[in-house]
Image 1 (tube, helix red, strand yellow):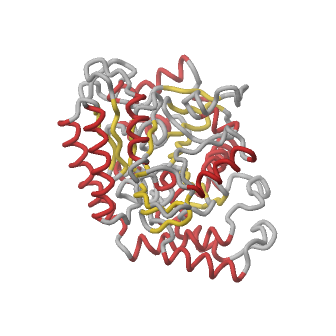
Image 2: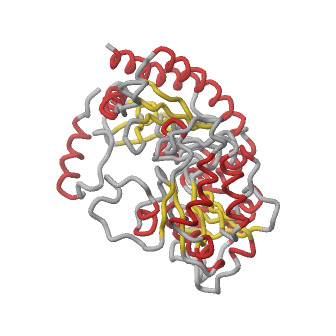
Image 3: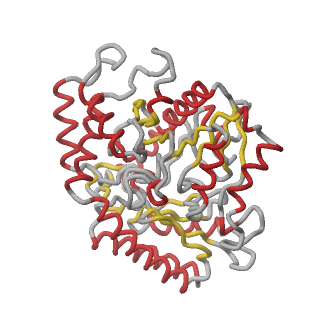
Length: 436
């Protein structure tokens, strides 16, 4: 499947007016999308296993979301909540406070993007604790702004040439069991990577000056790295014992992606602060910081905000998303999808030596590709080849990971059995071709 004439013309125009730093995975230009399908400008159909990088959990153009957007747009599109407030934002705040983990009173701040959510979560944690240090993790991804780029682990392409970076940010190893930074093996290790935070306070960042530890429950761009169940309970206890705010970055793992509304629910944990974005508003630019009331209320009036933060049209879309989850059993669908995917991916691991590891939670699953299962040498070229093989046959697929050797699955949770099978068949054919 090649790019058609219209896509080629758009590509030529793009080369003249859009900077090369903003790249695209495929050469096709989308004309429309529905559910888990994308149609390009020349009428070609694609199964979407990328979901706009985890944004379309309820599917492209869900009728309820489209209707909510239209209805709100006909009323008003912007007044700036800091000038003239409005009901959709307040109602959405009420719902997010209710569904995020934690039995304590909460409050919600709305902004525009995932990076903005992380920036504001850090701002609030620093203000509340009167400390400045922030601890992030290797393989983590938190955004592309100055601060969030600093928090992000991978240098190329995200950080290369963009320094100097924000101060007082520190990085420690994550629970990457497949490539343990400590050379240990789970479960004999006793999850030493969590206990290492105590040593980290001695050598790198004093607990007394650390405002927050921020982590993705399942690392996204870093390769869907999923820690063992003991990891976060240990880590969070250390934070609590030292008066450090724990920030759960649920921007990619939240909103049903793992079969729970938030991934931290898999371990029955209640983080003080949670960042939410991506699938929150089904493609509309909206993000949120949900946190303990005493933490969120610590900042003085006017210290938080933004002109477009919590745009009413975006809030209306998000309210529709939450209604879809509640009335259409989307979490149950996600759980069933995850079981089906895991069975298929595990069978591929037994069949193809290229697949070194299968990991994730629910339908948030990934395959780490290696040239050799003993040395675990990353197979980045093979991952790139598989992605290209897929989109040339009508499947949009994403790679990720610090070594660019991980294939991640982010299909809309509403994908049909037929669409899912079509996509998986293309992937399996690709693996078989690479194995020859």
